[in-house]
Each structure stands twice: as C-alpha cells, then as structure tokens.
Image (cartoon, rainbow, N blue to C red):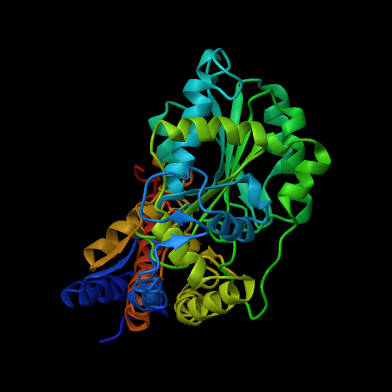
Length: 429
Ligand SMILES: Cc1ncc(COP(=O)(O)O)c(C=O)c1O
C-alpha cells in the first residue's frame, strides 16, 4: 500500500510509517557515488592504449613525471579553467591533494620554516555551510578551528567572510566548492569570484582558498553553465598564490580509478611539488594517457558529460518532484542545475529524527549535521539527499519514505506542541 503523503494526521502517518517498515526496504541515499551505468560510460578506458605504452618519448609504465604528462596537465587545465603549466596531476583522489595542501600550510608553511599556520595561536579555517563533510574531516584531522560561514545560492556570504578575515589574522584558509556545491548546488556568482580573488589582499600572508571544483563540468542543463575565471580574477588582483584549485575525474570516468588535478601559483606549486616528491616517485602515467585518449578535447568532455546528465537528471527530477508533491509549505529544498545533491531543510529540530525514521523504514540517509563542521547543525534541520547511485525506481521509493518521515516528524512535533505547549527540542547531532 503506498504511503499516505497527503495528510498530517498523526495516526495515519504512524500507520503509513509502520507499513513502510514492514516492507523490509534496503535503500541508500547517503553518498554521491556514480551509478554503475555512469561508470560504464568510461569502460572504454580499459584497453584504449592497445598496448602502446610510449608517449612523446616517455615510457608510461615507468617511475617519474611528478607533474604529470603535459597532455594530462592540459586536461586538468581544461577542467579547472587555469593555465596548463600551473597544473599537477595526481592519483585518483583530489581529496588526497587537498589533504596534502592543507598539511603543507598547517605544518610546513608556504614560505619556509616559521611560516606554518601552527606557529599562530590557532589555525582558523572558514567553512561555508552546509558544505562537504570530508573537507571538514580533513580540517578536524589537522586540528583546525572551523568557522562556519553561511552558504547562499551564489556562494558564501562574502560580507561575513571579509569581515572575519579583516578582524582575525589567525584565519589561514577557506574551503569552497564553487560550482554545483556539495550539498546545496550553489554556484559562485561573478561578484563572489572577484571577491574571493581579493581575499588574498585582505588576509595575512599564507592564506589559501581551497577552490574544490569537483563539479566543474557536471551540469544538468541543456547548455553548459560557465563561471567567471577565478584564475583571471586572481591575476588581475595579484593574488594567484592565494588559491589552490582542485578537480578530478572521479565523477567523469571511474570514481575509484581516475585522475586528480591541482593548480596553483608558481611559488605554491613549487612548494607542493617538493612536498609531493617526498610522498611519491610519480603518479600513474598509464592512467593519465588513457584519460587523455578518452577525453581528448572540450567537445569530447562535454559530450561525455551530457551522457552523465541523461542518467542523473531523471533521479534529481524524481527527488525534487517527490519533495514538491509531499512537502510544499512544510519544508524547503534545492533544485540543483548540476552536481550530485539535493539539500532538504526540515523545520528546525527535526533532521535527526527524520534520518532515524527513514533508517527504521530501510532508507539510509547521510547523518543529520554531516554538512556542518564536527557534524553539528545548530538548527538540526539540514539533510543531504544523494540520488545518483540507486536506480530511478529506488530513488522514487526512497523519496516516498523520506517524505513520509518528514511529515511524520512534523506531525509528532505539532502534536507534542499541542500537548505540552512547548516546541520539540532539537535532537543530538
Ligand atoms: C566537493 C567534493 N570534493 C571532492 C570530492 C572527492 O573527490 P575525489 O574523488 O577526487 O577525491 C567529492 C566527492 O563527493 C566532493 O563532493
């Protein structure tokens, strides 16, 4: 029997939830992983070299080439909208590149010994929220004090960012996903791009923005969405060293077997190159050449991303449609134009309960609070929905459960208020 999503009648919703529980579902909307059919779009990678392991005089199978092949650097440059000579090509995880960049700033310093952020009374890092939980995990691991900054539809609240940077010389860095952000789908406006470029002139020396362009070409729109170039803005502002650009092919080819890219100004790049030389003798050039052959130019890249969009868009549409049908007037959510996530905000104090109710009914959701530093959403309101991995039918079913759980949590909160005259307190996050 389908769940009743039209009423806020508590008894009816408790019964609908019990029905869902009895179905023994096992669905998962937790992580933004590509689905098997998305991964299959790049299966041609296997065998694409046809045994040709030499390229421009380089034996791809051997050690060396810390920067990456020039052709792979050009692929990274195309993705990140930066010059190719500013790019380093890494292993499959841009997260690893970001970890190393933050490690260098924190413990080794961008300007030699004595410039490490740890020489300051505290290392403060600005964290637009809701944001990407693994950024916050890196900062937690490195002992950073994370300062939440509100994320709007067009990027972080730059008035807040600029005033914190002006007041506090301990601010060392800022995380930022500039396009189709995880998890709200925000896209930095031209004005925000220009203001981010200016931060390098306002902050103390050593400040770095981690510009994590994980969803640079992951549009769901018929035409590509183009953003102002941060590299150009930094050149104009004289702040090229203040930004570390990062991207990867994780959501373009194989999430676990792709390429990562990092770009930075010449001094920052030299410091990182030296650091990475202590970490590896060189990245996987065989995989670099495979990727260059699969995605030789911007047209090939765009055509490939259109095929991804054809697979993801129906799932995002189904997610948003379920929210519109079941929660209009009761909650708010995003309608992303790209990326992998839909953000849902329940009335305050209910996100933890909704995630628990969904788990009881067999639908795993990202833990409430995950998109905030240390997992603490002060409103206990935000839930990240990640519909890319399950099948379309599974997404529809999972969203039926999510909507029922939000309605049930609201009905319980209202009943509790009616009964006691008090609001339900936010649960632990
Ligand atoms: C914003 C963002 N950055 C980075 C990553 C991970 O990228 P990679 O697979 O290159 O480590 C993700 C994955 O979900 C992401 O959402």
